[in-house]
Structures are given as C-alpha cells and as structure tokens.
Amino acid sequence: MDGDSRSSWLPWIVAVFLLLGAAYFAVAETAFASASRNKIKNAADKGDSRAEKALYVLDHFDRAISTLLIGTNIVHIAAASLVTVAVTRLWGLSAVSVSTVVTTIVVFFAGEMLPKSIAKKYPERLCKATAGTLRFFMVLFWPLSSLLTLIGRGAAALTPGEAEISVTEDELYDIIEDMTEEGSLDEEQGELISSALQFGEVTVESILTPRVDLEAIDIEDSLEDILSQIKSQNHSRLPVYEGSVDNVIGILQIRRFIKAYLHSGKDLDLRGLLDQPFFIHQSTKIDELLPVMSKKRQNIAVVTDNYGGTLGIVTVEDILEELVGEIWDEDDVVEEPFVELEEGVLLVDADESVSDVMEQLDYEDPDGDEELVNTRMGEWAYEQFTAIPKVGDSFRYHELEVTVSAMEHNRIRKLKVALLPKAEEGGEDA
Image (cartoon, rainbow, N blue to C red):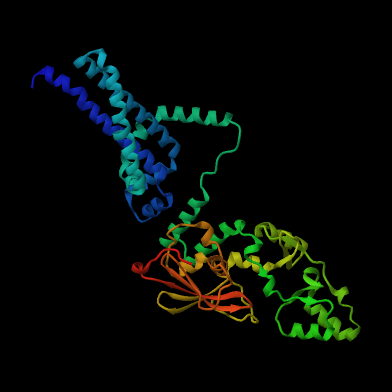
C-alpha cells in the first residue's frame, strides 16, 4: 500500500476509533447514572476491586459527569471533522452536506442510542467494566472538568428554587428490597422501614373498625343491660349513642363506669361520665391523625362518611399496628388471617388486602393494577357479583379462583383463594 492510499484510509480508521470512544462514553454515562449504589457498595465490601473503583466514581459523580461531557464532545467533534475532511478530499465540497447527515445518524445509533440501551440493561456490570478507564480520564481532564464544575455550581446558586429530590420513593423501596435480599437488613427490619414509608399514604378508612362490627352503648339502655354488655366484651372504652349509631354523644371509659356504678348503683348518671367524642372524616391520613390524637389525649376517634353518618371508629392502637404490625394483649383472641388448606389454596379473612393474599401465594398480578392490590378481599369480591353472594359463589381472576367461604348478615367473612395451574387460566370471569 503506497503513501497516498494509507493517507486516504487513515481518517476513516481514526473516525471508527472515535466512534468506539463515543460509545464508551455513552455506556459509562448511562451505567453510572442507572446503577444501584447499594449493589456496588456491597460488592466493594466483599473485596471486588473493580467495584471499589466504581464506588470512587459514584462518590465523585459531579466530576465524572464533567469528564464524560468533555470526552463525548471531543470524540463527536473530532469524528465529524475527520469525516468532513475525508469526504472533501474524495468527492469535493458538494458531498459535505450528505456526509454530515450520514455521520449524524451513525453517531446517534452506534455512538449513543445502542450503547445507552445496553448500559441501561446491565448498569452495575458495565459500571465496574468502565470504572478504571473513567478514573484515568477523570485525572486527564481534571483541570477542565474542575472549571466546568465550578461554573455549573455558580449557575445553580443563581437559580431560584429548591433542589430536586435526589432519591425517589420507588428508589427507596428498591434499596430496601436489595438490602433485604443481600442480608444487610433482616426481613422484619425491611418490612418495618417499608411500613414507615407507606405510613403517610394510609387513610383511616382502610384501618377502621367498621360500623357493622362496632360495639356501642345505647344511652337509653338500663344500667343493668349496659353492665351486661360491658361484661361480654374486652374493650376499655366504648362509644355511646342516642337514637342511632349515627349520633354518637360520647365515649365511656369502662373502668370509670364500674367505679361509679359500685359507688352510686342505680342512681348513676351515665351522661356525666362521658368524654367528648372526637370526630374525623374518612379521608384523614393516619400520619396526620396520630399527633392530633396524642395532643388531645384521645384514644378513640369516630370516623364519619361524606354524609356525616358514623362509618366506624379508629384507635391509636389501630394506627400503630399499621407501622409495627399486630399488637396482641392477653384478652385478644388469636385468629390466623391466612390458613393453608392445601398447597396453593388459602382460607383468608375478607379484611385482608389483595396484595397480602397474592404475596402469600407467591403470585404477581399480571395486570399490575395498583388500585386492586390495595383493595380488601371482601370489597373486591363484592365488586365481582351483581347481587349479594352466597356461600359457594366464586369468580376467576387470571390464575386465581376466589370462592365465598363464610357469610354473616350479608357480609363476606371468609374467602377461599386457590392458585390454579397456568394451563387452567381462563382470564377474569365473575
């Protein structure tokens, strides 16, 4: 090959290497932007030297981004210039416009889109693969990247408004899940942290004791009937109503009532023993309600619906159980919410959420319906029937078969949920 031939091919060879350089910088940028820092740190803690280098880059991410920006612009401009020179020599200035369009398309697909797509799929692996060379470029471009970083920080300081949240709620859930799977957190700690994150989204409507289960005292009942009612249950406080449960007039402390009854007998004035009821709307968030109840020293809140009627009651214990799980005392009757009848078949309480039941069966909702998984089983079952169901009525949801197992006063109490083999899947059928 003579000198002229080599000189004609040399720009194209260099341009290909520059294109590979553009792909490298695109891969590194996307990989480090998408990688889980927690996974990289865990690998570094186990002695992975490449993960240690990647962790260094993540700890100096502003500097790394400036380096990647400089490198990307250098290879893009150099590649475009070389192609322009080569095309001009071969075909003249008339072909420059066409070569610019072609070069832009090639750089976009081969130097940006494809590398970034691959890096998005394998971020941790490619982080560790590119960390060593990226650290070299961070040192090489340090003076220029430092200048760019200072300019960027100065511009940010002049920009009004607060900084955006760096970690989203979904990312926090992913971090907790990763730490639980890798053993940094045990399962109970992971569930507690997840419950704390969800705490602010829960409303009293989803945790209250519903009206149909409400134990309440009629002010018109005789003292003997009230005493008999108190003996039949284990609550320390009961709401008192006049006329109907929609008209709660106070909260009766059982201990105070018994002391007063032993002292005054049939001359006891029940109205004088009542505490002022505390009313809240069904849409109230429990994270807002808890400090209010604590400040007012209220143990029970009466939950009202949109028409002012009594929907149920919620206690401080109900709220705390959303955070720490079920709280048992010596008077509680232990009842398992999930009973395994056979493999893949559960008997569940109607008050359990659809998500908890699916989790027990190790089943993932194919539709990914977030509204559904937060619904209670009894409510979901009622939505599937055109009339009040009877024991034995059932419906299908993909690979789940749900059957009404127990009813009480037109209310579903128990449901049997069976996970069917995939071959029997018949879609949603009520």
